[in-house]
Amino acid sequence: DVKVTQSSRYLVKRTGEKVFLECVQDMDHENMFWYRQDPGLGLRLIYFSYDVKMKEKGDIPEGYSVSREKKERFSLILESASTNQTSMYLCASSLSWGSTEAFFGQGTRLTVV
Amino acid sequence: QKEVEQNSGPLSVPEGAIASLNCTYSDRVSQSFFWYRQYSGKSPELIMSIYSNGDKEDGRFTAQLNKASQYVSLLIRDSQPSDSATYLCAVKPDSWGKLQFGAGTQVVVTP
Image 1 (tube, rainbow over the protein chains, first blue to last red):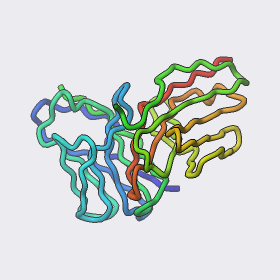
Image 2: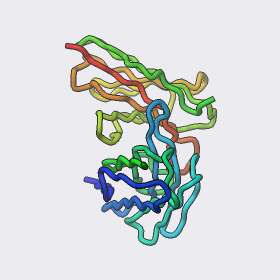
Image 3: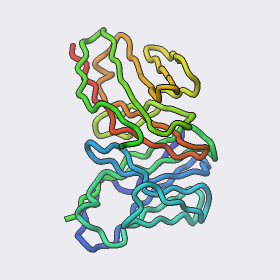
Image 4: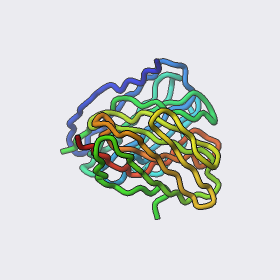
């Protein structure tokens, strides 16, 4: 079974802090994604990566950056956390370019106070 | 206009009945369409994918696609309480792997 693991289930951070959300997948998938999920808005794509050291902006990249130094790990960075970044963050991976099924991690509920 | 639109619900369905979920999308060139199920507090899981016009059946689930109308639907037959969840419609707008999601429809199956 594909396993996508996010480092934290719940996080509480203060406004202005630098926040790191980590995601690891164990199936040698090329594609990795970060989404945030908010009530009434569904999942919105923040950033994605098709290969090591490659990254592409999604629909809502402002206030975020990403890092993919190794194939299995994709990190989401909130440079200076703000209250409007309080959300559920979901990491996903898929096998390769054109691949259809995305596998999701368990999610990180981030609260910025 | 959102790229993928769904009714938010909740859609209340008696046990044993058919649940019908609808989704419309704006990008006419989209080729791949998916339904994910998300239980409360859990992450989404893929239940159906469909790529060509018509119906695709998998157990109690049937996905229907009409590209001319930019419309995709999901039917759940013989609904069970375990089907109570939020159903997310997702569209792959290009050849890359990224997905565009709708906001989801909450389904509540009542005994």
